[in-house]
Image (cartoon, rainbow over all chains, first blue to last red; front, side, top):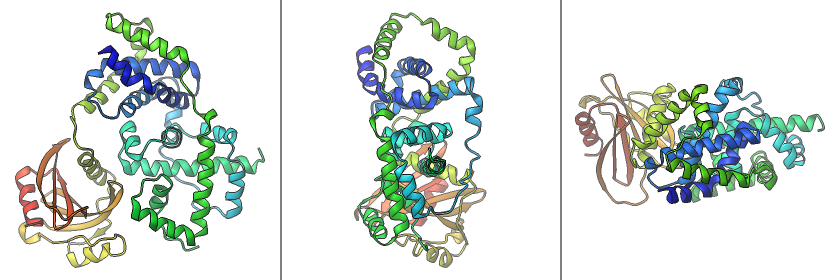
Length: 170
Length: 246
């Protein structure tokens, strides 16, 4: 069993750490969370029936991170789902051009870090980890339709952050 | 700008989640709509920036070592001190939540994702108070409402005289495509009937399953895929299914 566990879990350690690191945003706590998640995964390994082991592990990592956030930074989780999309106007071409010129990774990193956890999570899973809608739905436990709409809102928010940074001439 | 493209289609295109035909449809639109085209281009730039390697946090080498040691310790039956701290520090509740979630995961052994998806959609339609986009008991109102919103014409029948009045319809998104949903009532129960074109002309018999307490009937007939979902009892739902596609 331990051999099989290691074969299933260890190949996805980078993905697990990357998600934890983006959710918790601090290396030491992210490392603890991944370790904790792996322990949970080990205890529940009998329940793993084959299939998508990455999604299975990421789901556990995600839940561990959310528990951690709830306990250590409860305010971070409170501000995200009452969010409405504030700018409904379609960006003009100039704004888009400006946005593009600012899309270097340092700006994008800063913008992504300022988003609420739920938006950060869906963007990391989709764009950095390259999961499909279906996989994201498995990991986060929300229906595909909800994945699509939060991804859409997350993109809009990231654009707004980038545009704001561009406006400030950062 | 009078762009009428569905936002979900554009996002689905950006994410490569559309089928072949839908992709062509969006590409044709992009050729003529500068707004959408520049949006796609600018997102591609953002995506490239997101995917640059310095945004990916690789696990530190020592983490893998720690986990290997933890696994062998765990298998010898030892507990880690930090794990205890976690439990006593109130992590117990969090752990229970995770356990519950995982038990939930285990307790639905291999439900095909499509059926699970239908149930999620059904529950969502009830929770979000978004059961219907067109409310009508008249099949001649409901059927034309779908015109221009779908690339197929779903069969719509009112079954009021049989005891299952048509209540309305809406669009939903399942298996990477937009589908028609017809809503029927039986006493206080709602039945969501999902319809979309089958890939082939084959017929498949009705398959009955129970997922999260909902009855899900799946079948294929007359070149359509059907999924009926409801909290209605199995006998009545079976009767309903028989009436829909005799």
